[in-house]
Length: 132
Image (cartoon, rainbow, N blue to C red; front, top):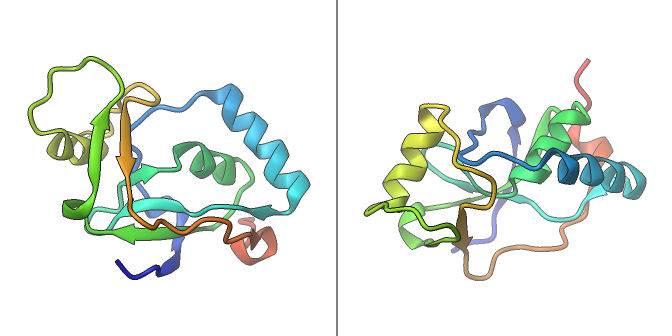
């Protein structure tokens, strides 16, 4: 996979998991203090479903950012593991379905493994454009 990071309109991304608000608030403080976002969110390339980075996504929304650094991946090349005991035969189909229907799994239900994912991109918040 090519390591191409795109700045995507934050309102176009879709969640499939709930977040821990305490963790989101901690990230807001850390990102604001650092002045940059360390890692991009990982996003499924067809439906723009967040696979990894729900807490970063929500922190940037709270900081009123307009765009978010996103690493787009074809879902067929991603390995998915369940962290909770749920009887789901086709987890990838369910992740997309939950996101499209705004039906969220509990936080940390799934674990998406992306080979050679980009890390430490350190995008300055000024480049993510505050909304009015």
